[in-house]
Length: 339
Ligand code: AMP
Ligand code: MG
Image 1 (cartoon, rainbow, N blue to C red):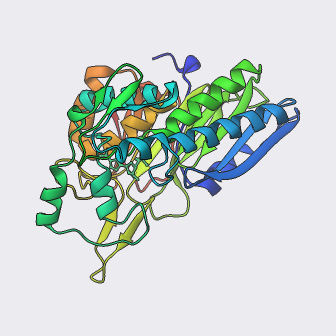
Image 2: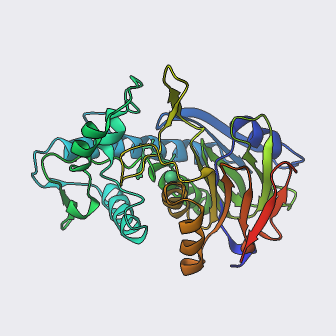
């Protein structure tokens, strides 16, 4: 993979990223911050970019309006409440759903956009968290099967009892849209921060690469830093959203579609570095479900992305394409290269 032409995005902690990218710029900095898709977002661009940032924000809000699972006006809501009827959708919704379907197939269902009933049962939609038992989960899993989604001509058909959740890919898709808006406006340098998703546009204004921190789960600092130009850097981690029961057991928001439970595959976090934000986002979630061994085999098969895995036994596994881009910041995490 040619590092110079990569278009990375990522997800480390907000403070982390902010600390890293506010350095040495002579060009005018334009910035806009807002909350969308349940996420604090910050768009930065160098040059005269206020109008472009406004356009980018509007696009993100438009996508949120189409893809939200809770907004009764959204297209995803309409599909989920259609009772099995065909629903006509916009080109954006169709494209993202088609992409999610392809990625579900490629990851053998580790990513499954029909996981919504299980995500909802755990309380991750409403914030009213509760532990689901085996019986309830196996009943819910009968409603989870991406192969039942029918993509028709500009329309979608979903069996009555099933529901979609594109939360695992929506922010990556939105970040790609923002990067495209930047490119159309001729912006050569910027950073798109959408929570766990980062899109580095060009280089820093001084020409050096963007430095994106990979957060230490439950820690203050970061385990490592990736230096990138034109790349998506996306992290999925169990530490990003979770709740704890009275016995201190932790339940996080990335679920294994084969069990309905929080994916417990031996990983604390997965960071994907590649050109497309949507691809990175789909992979970060799917690989978190797969675990380190399946992840390694998957990478060896495709080799069109790079990854940094933090394992539950606190090791760092990094693919060789990042050999020039990754630096370890915390020696407590032994590093192994995957090649
Ligand atoms: P991410 O932060 O990109 O890893 O996406 C996590 C979000 O995607 C969760 O909050 C759920 O809404 C949804 N989700 C959880 N598990 C899965 C899964 N296995 N496949 C697809 N979406 C999922
Ligand atoms: Mg994701």
